[in-house]
Length: 417
Image 1 (tube, rainbow, N blue to C red):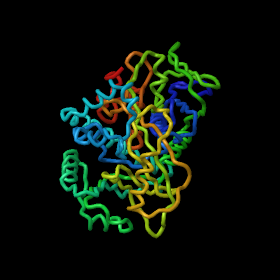
Image 2: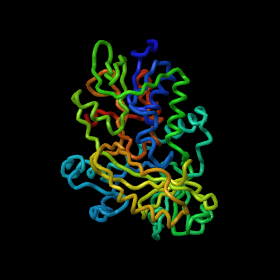
Image 3: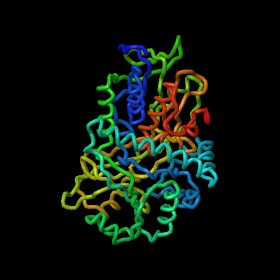
């Protein structure tokens, strides 16, 4: 392996979200010299704004067979769980058609199996790394609660049975059991399903930063700069930055929603869309605490206890990545959240992020088809924080000529580009 210098490395990882930081650390663990590059500090973009859940049970993509039953309410464009821009839908009709086609029942099983392998490997790494990084105090092993205001016993039982097929434990709860689990919330939920093997953290940004510090302490280098281009040349790659350039034998593109832009000059047309999401945090009432994340399924939002307060996250908004913010979903769900949990005024400004999504709701993990030494790690949709560590670990293993720690075949970039 080549020694690290300011402008040369074995591996340059572009993007310091959870995926990029994980890839950088895993490559460094394998003895490679690694440079991690981002325009902002680690964990400052999409990896900051999520619900902080390490979800064992998020194996069912958004485009699953039940989506067809929900389409009538989603087409009204008024539901908190999903809003969409008609102009975006027309402009991206091909992506929408592929997304809907992948919701067929025959496509669910293989994708759920693939995500189960990725999530299982990732949860294991999260639990190891968070302690190793000195951030073990941030993780909660309290599960997360999926809750229905309606009498949705059948839906909860069906979900429980599906999870059980994959060996994922859960507990069905009635109203009384939910009150025993969360005694400080208003008893509005009739049915609940507790994912008992799911963990959560009180600050996903601080966890990503802790992993980045762990990478740096292991001899990795972090550089804050705008990435302008990547160009093949010589025996590797030239990474063009706003303030210089870096040469490397391998480049990992882990730029989340900005990944497709960087790859386009190389001839790759990535069918990437964006599940935009919003959150806002509120002062908690210490006397009326929330003990774990709760997904209000009928309301279309998640509320979770964070370091700074109660974070309320909205549903999915399908539109252009850089379209102006629309806080309609957030405004719709905050009163619903207040009807369940007691919290005070807002802390800071509302946040918006873009979660990169491919039509089959599976990430790209692996080598680019037509360029040696170019590796792709993005498209983790709304479970990026959960799946980041194993996404990065698989990339590092492949670079080192070793097999991924799970079956990464379903995630091969060549299925689209």
